[in-house]
Amino acid sequence: MSEYTLVTGATGFVGSAVARVLLERGHRLRLMVRAGADGSNLKGLDAEIVNGDLTSPETFAPALKGCRYLFHVAADYRLWVPDPATMMAANVEGTRRLMLAALEAGCEKIVYCSSVAALGLRKDGRPADETTPVTEHDVIGVYKLSKYRAEQAVLKLVAERGLPAVIVNPSTPIGPRDIKPTPTGQMIVDCASGRMPAYVETGLNIVHVDDVAEGHALALERGEIGQKYILGGENHSLGDLFRMVSEIAGVKPPRIKLRQSWLYPVATVSEWMARGFGIEPRVTRETLAMSRKLMYFSSRKAEEKLGYAPRPAREAVSDAIAWFRDHGRIG
Image: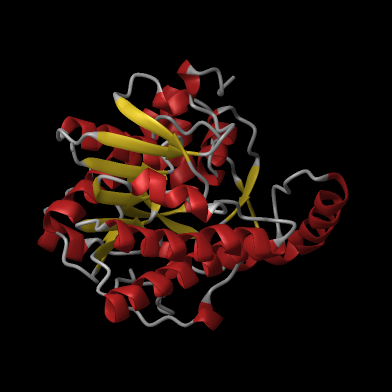
């Protein structure tokens, strides 16, 4: 029987990039896809498609049958959810049960896509790494908490059940095929379209989505079981990012820098309206709290141990703007 490599979340931004990198390396792919998911990112991919969902564990065993490797990239990624339990069910319990199913199926090696959201941050603003201390109480927001708990569940299975998993922690990917788009992608669209007069300053680590995908493949080839590897790029303030976007897009950059405290009443009203009308809010109290922390990270471990070599952030921004323009997202 031919041995497959299963990728979950392949319709998504990071997952589709991972699938492409694996195909280039000669993997025979099987992609686990939710029923009704937007399949735009699957066009042109030579892969077997199977239906599966993180909230439907009965779909795991058929998807994993005959698979040598598993790349678990799927996740419920939203910065606001009306019911946190649904996100926890998918990202935490769904991940745990998928890992158990992979053990039962005899997978040789697993790459689990976590997030820097699951890692600690330094109070002095210097870049954090895989060893920066973090507890559940340090994590702000339902999504970040779900990724922290999922990562801990994977590590526990590595320690107690011998799960052959390597963990990668992408930072903030940008680039082509951001079909939703992600929250960061939406900010780039708004800025490049001249629709962002003001912003709240923070700091983040920008990485090209294709470099994140390459890091996944390197983690399979060279990563050590039970280890974590940050897949990041360059650290930039949000203001610097918007100035970079504006320069590349040929528009004026946003000039008004808002204080977080000014927006808390707006966030409260936005959340109230979201609960009442089902529209995802553009600003929440959690995102404002997160913006107070500089989300700077170091990828030195991945560079030294995996041979990871991310390109400059400017290339990621340029590729993202080009893709959004080609697909009519930037007016």
